Length: 301
Figure 1 (cartoon, rainbow, N blue to C red):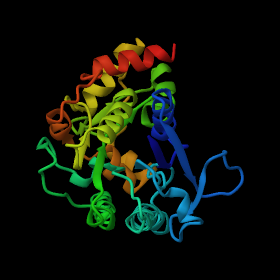
Figure 2 (spheres, rainbow, N blue to C red; figure 1 turned 45 degrees about the vertical axis):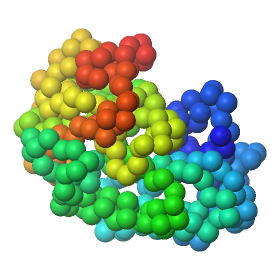
Figure 3 (cartoon, one colour; figure 1 turned 180 degrees about the vertical axis):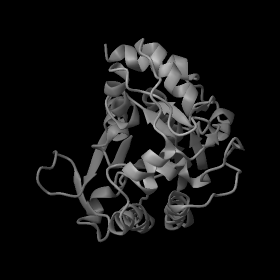
Figure 4 (spheres, one colour; figure 1 turned 30 degrees about the vertical axis):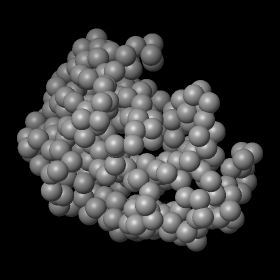
C-alpha cells in the first residue's frame, strides 16, 4: 500500500513508519516545512491544505497523527487555542482535501484520545459511553467531528482513542524513568484515579490492524484491557526498577506546578477498555501493566 501520514516525526509516527515499511508498504509523509523534506514527501498546511493535491491522488490509506503536544507546557489561553486548532482545523482541512479526490483512499485512521470521556472515576468506559466534560473532552469531540467530510465521501474512518502510550523513547514513561530510578517516584494525588494505557508496540499493531481490517470503523479505544490506578502503576514501575516509590505528589502541589494540566491529565480518572478492538479480533501482546513495564523498562537496560 501507499500510506499518507501526517505527524510522522512523532512517537507513534516513527514507530508505525518502521513497521509499515518493514511490511513492504510505502509511507509518504505530509510535512509542514519545505526544508528539510525527505524525498517523496508532500507539503501541506493544516490550515490551507496541500500545495499540490495531485500528489495524494491514489493513496490506499491515510494515517493522521498531526497535532500540538498537549503536555508540552502550561495551558495558557493561547496554548489551548493552538492545541484545539491544530487538531480540529488540521483534520477538517485534510478531510476536505481527501473528499475532493478523484481516487480517494479506502481508509482514514486518525489519532484521537480517551480524553473524550473526561474524568469518570471508576466507571468502565467503552466506545458506547457518552462524552465527558472539560477542555480535553470538548477538543476530542470536535476533533472527531471534523472528519465529517471524509465520512460523507465514503471513506472508512477510524478514530483511535489513545490512552497513555508507554514507550522508553518518549511520552510520560520516559519522563518518569529518571526520577523513579533515583527513588523519587510516588503516586499522584490520591493515586486512586484510573489510568488507561497501552504499550507502544501494541499501539502500533492496533493502527496496522485498523488499516487492514475492513470491519473496524468509528471510535476505537486504543488501550490495554487492564487499566490500573495511578498507585498500582507507580508501585509496579518501582518494583520493575527495584526502587522505592514512597514520595507522593499531592494534588495541590501538582495544580500549582502544572495548572489545569494537572486536573485533566494527571488527576483525572479514565477506566477505558478496548471493547471494539478486541471484538474485531485484535489481541494485545502486553495485556497487563506488569508485562508492559517489564518489557519496556528491560529494553532501557
